[in-house]
Image 1 (tube, rainbow, N blue to C red):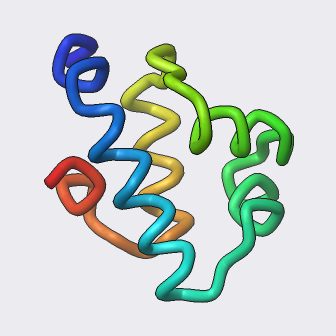
Image 2 (tube, rainbow, N blue to C red):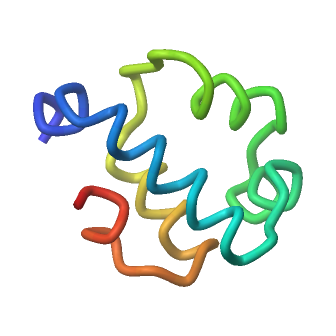
Length: 73
């Protein structure tokens, strides 16, 4: 699973940013929903952060009200 996440970070980041835009959700709102710092969310979305876990990705999917696979496709 870690390799899949690492190899697909650009896709995951782009999907999250697209969904945030579509749903008009701010990074701050996402951070609150996943109980994280806004700076951490910003870092994850803007940098090549390959340290995300499937657990955090799952919390993001729940917060965005999408299926986990939608972040990976």
